[in-house]
Length: 203
Image 1 (cartoon, rainbow, N blue to C red):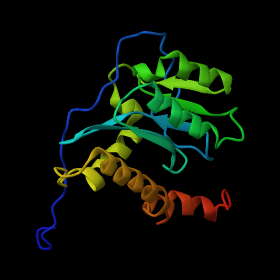
Image 2 (image 1 turned 180 degrees about the horizontal axis):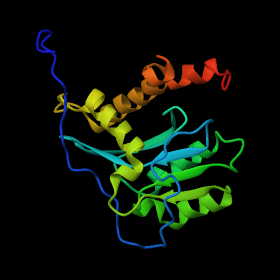
Image 3 (image 1 turned 90 degrees about the horizontal axis):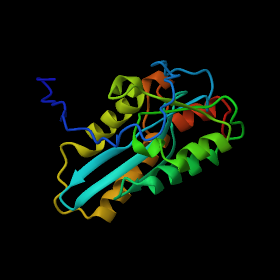
Image 4 (image 1 turned 60 degrees about the horizontal axis):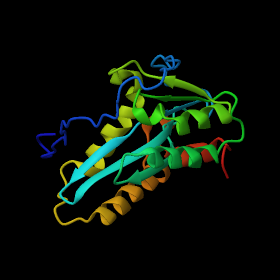
């Protein structure tokens, strides 16, 4: 790396936290840090991450499928509110044909304790799972995605003259690129979408 003058981009920032106390009973951690599955739509992970640029704050809420690390759905907003997570969840639910085996795992943030989220879990026959309080390794696969995203897209770039709308567009473009173009060695050098195509899971 010294010979090629390569530098690793690594920035430590305070993680956004949506924890607001035990406002409703927490569910058990059913994932137990086992983020592997044999098929899609068996384990979904979700969380919220924050981006701070001179123009303001932007929040991203994705759902990650443990099968291949693909992004099932995502939403982006300037407010970390119920609409951010619920609209993302509704998009993800529209992709399902069979809900029966799906576990949806999150931290203990307020968004996953509100009636709207819990009602969606129950109505669709899903199983909710939660990390222990303040234990980020319990959702490390989702945290790992945020780390890759910020190292590749965010850290080390200058955002001084970028508007909120432009930033949101660029972030959305990255998410599409991640699913469709970004290769993963664990998937045989394919993107999540192309990996599923080789398995005949999508046309």
